[in-house]
Amino acid sequence: MKQIFNFVRDAFSLSNSFLKGNKLRSALSVLGIAIGIFCIVAVLTFAGSMKKNVRTDLESLGMNVIIIEKWPWGFGGGEYKWWDFLNRPNASIRDYKLIQQRFSPEIVRDIGFECSSSGITIKYGKKSTTKSKLMGITANYAQMNGISLSNGRMFNEQEEKSGKNLAVIGQDLATEFFGNNNPVGKSIKIKGLKTTVIGVFEKQGSMMNKQADKGIFIPISYMRNFAEVTSGEAGSKIIVRGYENRPSEELVAEVTKLMRGIRMLKPKEKDNFALNKMTLFSEQLDSTFAMLDIVAWILGLFSLIVGMFGIANIMFVSVKERTPIIGVQKALGAKKSFILTQFLYESVVLSLIGGMAGIILVWVTSIGISKGLDFPVYFTINNFATGIILSMITGIIAGIVPAIRASKLDPVEAIRS
Image 1 (spheres, one colour):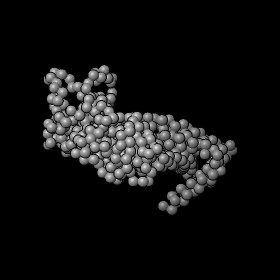
Image 2 (cartoon, rainbow, N blue to C red):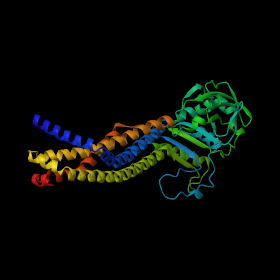
Image 3 (cartoon, rainbow, N blue to C red):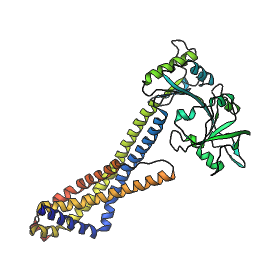
Image 4 (spheres, rainbow, N blue to C red):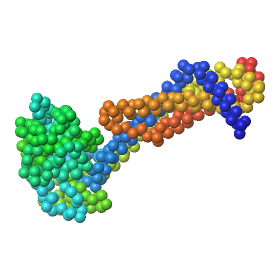
């Protein structure tokens, strides 16, 4: 055991001395590895973070959710036949109320309605904005979307039906208008109409609920003052939530039956509504990120191959320069394995330095994005391990041929050269 330890120590000591003596050449040789590892680990990290963030949002909404709209989501590939959907009626308040009256409570857990309008002027004192989306919602909006309030309360069903001039606002809008002051009880003007703020949503920052941060949410009946709600023209949708422990097919069948009855469609007529399911979004998400992973690996592997040839070239040059030294070592009794270990070690160390540089750059970038863009980036131990393992494999492949060539040199010929 002691002999093995001394063997490895001596080999590594010699290699380190040569690496330190050629710092510039060593630094240039690791650049390609650093770029390759950065490409792979960065895309894996950011794609994984995006996937995790979206999945968290989907879980807060519940996967057994159907959104009734005019337009189907364009997932699944193939041609999007928009002309088939152009003349469909929008999801309307009438549809929503009839579903409320007819649904089966053992299948449907909750129903909500929402519509939106953009470009409406919102004012508080001398401050104003047209960038906030005005949302007309039902009283159960927060519950159905998994959003909590940081301050105040939601309006209730009675206030929703009576069209009270109340509003719940997003955290970003609250900060923009009121700073550190409490917005609850303050009055803002929506298109000139005085509206009382009764609540503030917690900061969302997520992809699915990000609109809540800058939005202003009012009772659906009050929304009639700002948009055409009755016909469903104002970007309207009906959200139907089922039970998580029941099959989604059951909910689809129930909603389809209800909507066909409400729209009075004949048996052979096609559906004139779209049932957009969260499961479709999840499936599309999986395929999209799988494609991103493939692209990342292709780009990264090309960079790694370039870096690998760079390190191999450096190692061949190193063998050429150190041929007399190798001859002396072998003449003094150094075995082939000793020479082989020296050069393999140098190659792996160069590759690991490049890999670590790429990994550190990904880590620093992820911290900057998490803090600067309010988008959580998760740098996982799996991605770190992937970068390290790829670096080691690249170093071994790049150094194996030069190392074998060095170990097979004839000591006499090597000394003479």
